Amino acid sequence: MKYVSFKMWVADKYKYKDGYAIWLVVRKENKRKVMALGIYAEAHQWDNKTERFITDKRVMSLHPDRVFLNDWITQKKAEILKILSTFEQNKIDWTPNQFEREFFHYSSKGNVKDYFDSLITTLKDTNHFGNAACYARTMHLLELFDNKFATRLFPEIDIKYVKAFDVFLQKRGCAGNTRKYYFKALRACLNKAIQDKEASESTYPFGKGGFNISSLEEETAKRYLPIDYLEKLKTTEMKSSTHEMTRRLFLFTYYCYGISFMDAALLTKDNIVRYNGGTYLVYKRHKTKEAKKVKPIQIKITDTIQGLFDWFMSNTVLIGDYLLPIISKEGYKGEQLYNHIRSRFSRNNKNLKNLATALEITDMKLTSYVSRHTMAMTLQDNQIPREVISQILGHSDLATTNTYLDSFATSVIDEAAKVL
Image (cartoon, rainbow, N blue to C red):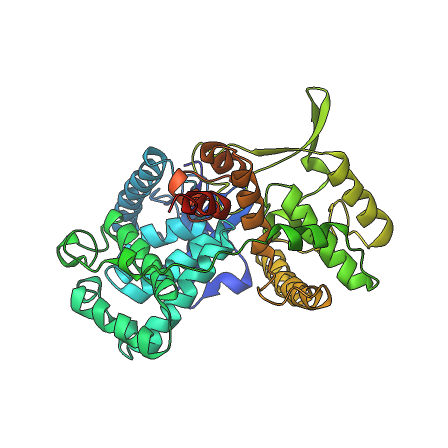
């Protein structure tokens, strides 16, 4: 088989009292996973080429269970082909860890914590570290809520259980939107478990007649800057080098269609593309890049954006090919890189708080999200259609865009009030 093989390594570290271990080896791209099968043999009793126990009677001391074990291997190879075929049919870009879970599914079938753990591992293996962190936080709270969570099976996660968990979260002081965040993760986990035949729909606590997650949503204060504050940010150069870098990073995200801090941090020279007589930043949002039919976002590099690039080049330390002074150490990859950017994100928000104080922006909190909301509201105030704003924001549907925007600009409401 292309990805999976049964193999014996004749080396002291693989030698046990019953002989050398025979392993199930899974290879996918640059990843490999070796799984114990609990089968042992002497070196002359096994053929790595055919992946079977030798049955030639001319060989001295054949394995006593060779016929049974060869039949068992044949059966397992058929199961492996079925697993790989299912992955292909469902267009799953699987990992060795996913294969292991499918191959040994009997050991964790129906157990909620085991499924959460495997889901988190898979997300990390596929570089979805944000989603992995979301599931990990949700599971941690479930463990605090339920001291028997480690042994819970999916049928036990019913409507009564979910309602009790909601009461627990309220007692911890979690607001509606925070509770919604955790319940969406729990619901997604249950949906995946049902798809994987680990759980049944019979006790599913969400959906029609079940626990209503959308009812938890609360209206949040709009996080966009008034025009005078935006102008102050655009025109006031700061004496503090930290304040000035923070101000320019904020403006960069604003001019670049409200690009997220994570996406901005990951921009490199490879994201600069020249075509149609212009120069563009082209990237896919880190949050949705693996989703189907996601189009890259294209941002024309204006003189203003180029001026910011030039300033960063002259006044800050840039690492490798990164375009912005966010990532501060070379060599980080995967989860380590993700955690580094999250740490820099927290520091940037602290710097924005200090910048707001220096600029006497005292009646609202200045965060990295504010630039994205401000950009969207500025476009709306200039009569740009919401469908266009939605595409600029990289949203998959208009409903998401609507959460960024008031139903009408304040000026429109003020004009309507004149007829009263």
